[in-house]
Each structure stands twice: as structure tokens, then as C-alpha cells.
Length: 380
Image 1 (cartoon, helix red, strand yellow):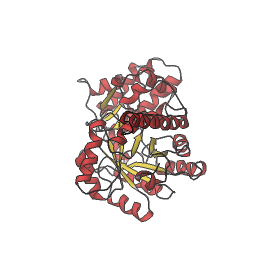
Image 2 (cartoon, helix red, strand yellow):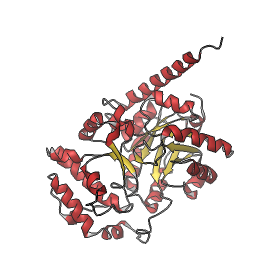
Image 3 (cartoon, one colour):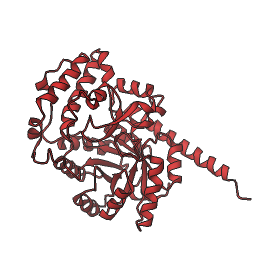
Image 4 (tube, helix red, strand yellow):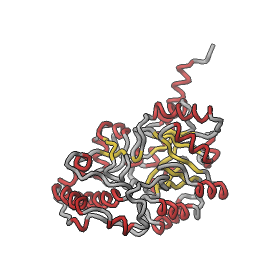
């Protein structure tokens, strides 16, 4: 296809696949889409290993990296210099609550074992910058940032290296701020999306952002994100002014995905209304599959969610324990299995290969465009 994001990134088909799994990134890019590795779950050393592997297996196809450099830091954690200090700030009440919740589902955990962290991991500005530096050492064709304005250092480095900078937004005013900051691509993400998201629906947000950028005098391509699981939806968003689609949840139900079999089974069984936008995993509103974990933390008996990144230092070790318990035969723990996923989960009815998803998107896209053309007639 010949459009702006294809020209900027070198991809054949403007289907962007955000994934924490290197296998998905490689499969999508080699199939003509554009894989984007989510870097936040890695330390800089781990990210280096992942990107070396991608470089060795992607056969020169373009790919990108998504990092998180938060624009604002909660005042409650702003004074902490490292993860050791952050871990020490997590109260005994929060540790005991977490241990008690896990124990209800047969996962024996001592309060002192609740929190886990690695030296440079988690969603903090210093960790984000460290991951960004790693990413720029590799032949990436895109770097993306969320949770606020893309930092000047990222934009400057991107322009110097010829690497387009993308920024995720959830409102038109955010898009205008990103454009003024100098980003190259806007990813407008609706509230249906998995992970961190705003409240405006994708159907409303895309034309709103496209119109606002045009009126502001900005010629910046927009990628549509949030609930997009099919090529027909992608075509609809492009009809509304987007230049392509940024997708995440659809790749969780692929054979290459990092998700467990237990979660993929839950995805297939889930309805679109089985997700929840909650702070109980990262400390900021993020959409995920709803379980008793969210009901407990968000309920009146809970101790209150922690700010980012403290909440993740509690939740991520807990969900690792949950997955391990299920693998070891604890069926009760299956009730707690969850992951970031959008409302489009209701459209997932099978597990496919990542290459197969790209092919299906292409075919559905062409069919949708052909259907619209036929509906319009030949004008005679």
C-alpha cells in the first residue's frame, strides 16, 4: 500500500502489531505488517537480548519498539531514586492484603514475599530512558511512547537517526500537544483498547483527532487503535481518516504469543463486557480481563490501589504466581488469570498464527473496501 505510514516505516500493509513477544513481532513484519515490541516488561539487558534475536530472525523487515517514559510522576513516589526505595515504601497492609487474596485461591504466599523487582525494570522515567537508549542501538524503523508527551530527548534522537517517533493519545487535545512537540505519527487509542487507555471510544476519537490535526495545520498521519480485531474494522477507521491500525489484543490469541494457554482459553470464552478499566495492575487506568483480583482491589474492603510503579511491583509477581499455580494443576487459581486485553476480546473465537492474522486482515480489508465501492456504484 502507498500511504504515509508505509512510506515512513517501510511496511507493506499498515497493520501495526504491538506485542511483548518477539516471535509475534518477527512473524507480523515478515508477513508484511509492522511488529512493535513492547519493551516495558524487560530490563535494558533483557531488551538487548530480545532485539538481537529479532535482528537475527526478521530478515531485514521493518520493526519498532514501544517504551514508556511517563510525562508525570505521582508525587507520592517522586522522591524515590530506585526500585529498592520504592519497594520499601509498599506498606505492610498492602502486602498482607495481596498475600491473603492469593491464599484464598490456593496460592500460599507470605506477605514478605509479595513484592519483587529487578534493578532497572518497571514503568519509571529512568527505566524508560534506559530502554530507549537500547532501542536506538538497533535498526528500528519506529519508536513509540505513551503516558504523556514524547520526551524531547526521544524526538531529537529519532530525528537524528531517521527513526519516526509515534505517540499514543486518548483525546484530541493530547494529539495537538504531541504534534506541537514534533512527533511523526499519532496513535489515537480509544477506550476499548487493552492496557492504558482513555475514555473516548475509537469511533469518535479517530475523526476527532484527524479533524483537529488538520485544523491545527499539522500534516501528521494517524493510526487508529482500540478494539480493532478485523480488517473490516481497519478499513472503517481508514475511511474515517486514519492511515492504518495499531493493534494489540488480537495478537494475544496467537500461537506465538507470550500469553498462557489458560489465558487464551479465557479470551476465547470472554465477552466484550468481561473487561474492566482498572488501576489495580499498574496504578493507572488500564483495561484488562476482569477477575476477582480486580473486584478485591477496587472494592470497598481493599486497601486502595498504589501509584505507578508500586502497583506493578505488587501485581506482576502475583500474576506470575497465579500462572505458575495453574500450570501446576491449581484449578482454583485459574479464576484469577488475567492480562491486558481490550473489549475486542468478544471477537476472538479461535487461536491463530500471527502470520494467519495478518493474512486475514488483508483479505477482510480488501473485501470491505470492495463492498463499499460496490455500494457506491460506478456513478453512471
